[in-house]
Length: 328
Image (cartoon, rainbow, N blue to C red):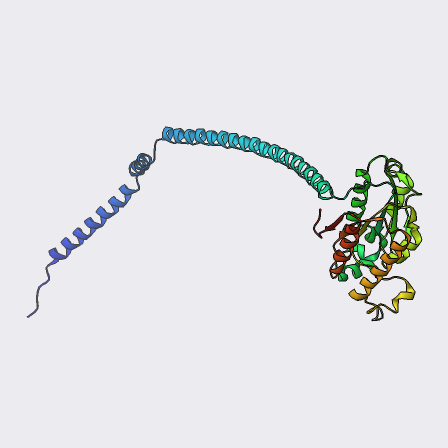
């Protein structure tokens, strides 16, 4: 049996659908209307801070920034002034240190003078005999060999020989004005530096003597026997030795009879002591009453020197002093 279709129901559904579509369209159109746009703008403006508040915040930051800049500038100025003060204090400190150093040096020099006070040049007709042999270049055998191979300019700058020359200068400076003095050097031979016996003022102010002292270059062997032969010691009352050890050569004819003198290039202790004995035997023959004074500088490997020189010095009541390596 065929069912009848109800046309009214279909039409009602269509109408409802169309109405719903119209409502949706209307809502869309209303959403994009100026009214809603303005409302959104107002909502945004309300969400944002007030413009005047922003200005005040910016001004506050500017003010704080200016204050900070001024503070930094002030601190930089303070640091600059402090730096200047520190620099000035350092300068004052350096000046003070130099003054203290000069005072210390002065005290040391005075102490050094007192160190030699027991050795006074107090006899008329005194010969000061300065060792200028190669051993006066340094304090041990190895360094002496190195120095011997160096230039003459470096040899003249030897600390040890410079000390010896300052001792010579001190002896002459401390002598009594009426004391007559002669000065000579010795190594392989002896050489006078002063032209005969002179008062100390005539030696100190003698430009030729000063020039000779400055030009001495330590070199050669140490031959006391030859020095005593060359210097004609009969007329002297006193000798001041400034040396560092026993002789390394002597009278050629006696060398063969001294034990240890034929062992090659190195001179043994026995040989050196034999040369010393022979030289002073010769001196005692020509002037047995001459006073011997010795300022003995340090030399490594020559222990007998202090024994032999001290005995000769004390025999006629002379003075004997040993100078350590670190002597100022």
